[in-house]
Length: 161
View 1 (tube, rainbow, N blue to C red):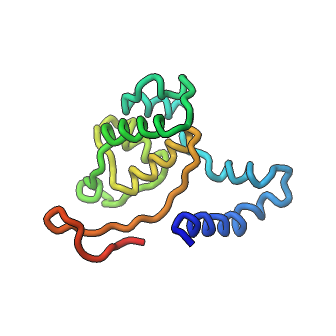
View 2 (cartoon, rainbow, N blue to C red; view 1 turned 90 degrees about the vertical axis):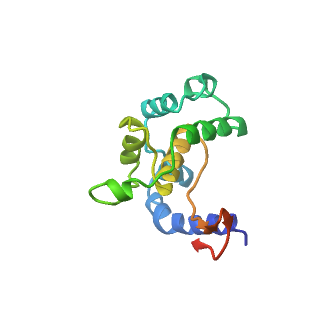
């Protein structure tokens, strides 16, 4: 079973265990419940603010109703990584030394605080996940593994999932 199939299988098991029992006695179909469970945490106004923040070209903004294709995804990715940095300053310079993955906290930290910073890898990935959902892309979170580098060259065992 490939990693993608394993992830899909695990997600399906979770839906059947936790989400679908809620839908059994409801008039809504399972697909609608699934969409609701995977909905974005960001409003259209927040998405518009984000598009402005990353200087997304107007032809790719929601007002232009862009196609959900590779060109649009590429533009989002390029403008996101050009505007939102990967950094871990919160672990050193915050009073709590903790990372919040709450979508509204992420939006505030990355977009509305105008601090011209990004976030830790988990913050950026979770944030972009919610952005893509709000734009209509079908996305899901998955675990990652990293490998240390020695002199810029990958070396050693993988850590993480």
